[in-house]
Image (cartoon, rainbow, N blue to C red):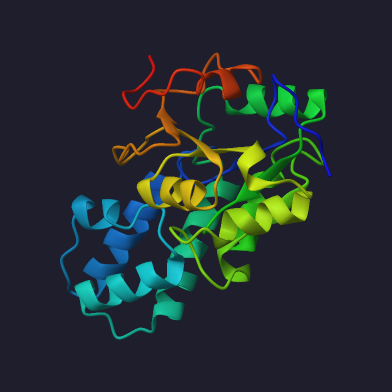
Length: 230
């Protein structure tokens, strides 16, 4: 078991899309193009309703909403292909402070896990842009029985690292992901991107990870707050 100190979490469990890398515009663009290709109508609001969701559930929603002659699996595979192409072509940027915080945590020996509802092929393309062994575990949407907002993804990550979820900090951008982390018993730092946070006990909301240090991750919870920290 990894021991927790008074100043550092036992582990940090990271969401990917929107939290680490700004892939949301790629997802939104791919969804809109796919639906319109089949003669349907799709809005940004439709896309935002799916942020952080299990991909197969999102695929079913897109199929039904857009009237697509595709299975949810086919919808997901098409969208993944489009987003993966954008990532490989360098069309996405890293969110402020992410690389710096990951490097500091690694230097301090705090294990990190990637917990994403994207599939492994996309997760690996993102992880490949980071130093080797940045993540001690990777949990992806195609490898879990229940997706976010179910607690299973974060429980799986904590188990893989050999830590108690209550000693972990989850970093998320979406309401479903934050709900998953809270349900798993972890402390959740919400950094909203495309969708506003739904604050609940056990969560703090901040505007950005820019300037956030490893030692800050627990002190954010010293004085419970639901309003964003600027």
